[in-house]
Image 1 (cartoon, rainbow, N blue to C red):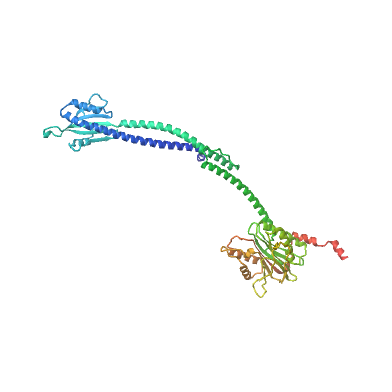
Image 2: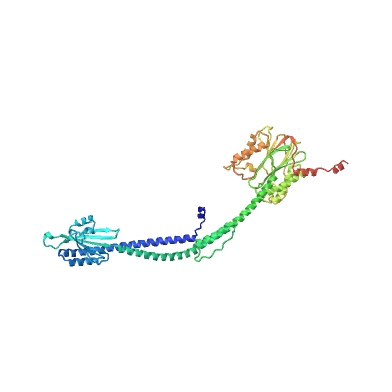
Length: 561
């Protein structure tokens, strides 16, 4: 529960920026102050050491002479002169055995008694001091640093140099020891640090307030406006946002505002387009459903003396291929397959018009397939104009006469499968004509008659109709399925079952195209002449026209009389 509450805590951008500014200013100013104070302290310490060293060395020759002549007045005067430096803690003069001759300590008026050199200098350092011998080329001072207590000690042996007697020349007569401190430098550095801290804190507060006001106007306020606008979008309230004008001209924030409003426009347009696409998709789906009702489902479908099986698949939501069959008088059957140029909704609408015309054939007595094509030519031309035309194959099969009459309007030549013929290869039903809806170059609508071809059609003969989408289907190598492959496959089929024939071609097509999507509608139909008649096939349209064409009882009595 506590974790959930922690995740809901909102840290405003204002607080984050203010915190960041304060941190940056404190780090920068603190680093600067520390560096400056450290540099200044080092310089002061070096200067102090030089000054004390100079005072110490200048007192050495004076004390050497005064100690040899036992001139205590000069000794005390010289030591007091050293003590005038406020940084000197003590100035001491010791005999050559290390006993105090004169010992001055800051803060005490009375000179301490019984002070020995070991009280000031550690034993090891004392031994080093006692071992120092006179060297006119190089005077070695003993320096002891106690940085923990910020104390420094200078010590040096005193020699008598002015004796005329050789045995007294450079004789060690005592030791000068001076102790000084640099604590005042630390105190001064701390005071300076405090002053720097106060100064930079005030300066930092001023900079933070000024920077915050500038950043708030330049960045935070525009971002808050964008945040409010984005919340409106999240709540499905899409509209362009009016932002405040900038005081400092155009910059990246201004570009972000413009891009934000442009994004809102794009989202609004995208939603409109999505709704329009959805509406069109619904219309296409409706058209697809309607078109499916135009094409019969046939899997070993028995109609009178015939068995029919078919395959249909459109390349898009709506196709331009169409096929159908119509039972006619005297046991005959009309079978048709057509292909509108292109595919999609316009092609599907044209097939709907063709289907509407063909359904009227139930009420008429049609004897020749050419008549159907001539009438369809007029219909397609009037509806499709110059943009849409249609190929069509039309055949009437008479089982009583065992004849097949067909006319072709530029459709692929069907195949006739006759297992009793001398050759096992399917034969091609040749015969061609112009496409339906074709307009001659001189814009004349004069009809071109379609030829009627008649062939024998025996029991167990099969007619195989197909659209160019089958033979022009391509595989991944852009090779077409081709009529040659189709004929070869039909030749290899030993069955007379139309559904098996259709399924075999379908599987071979899928294998060839490797499952790729068809670029054009694919339709093929197999119709076989059976030895026996199958009764019972009917539909609502057939029933309607059968009842309508049947003469009434009064008409029959009148005819008899």
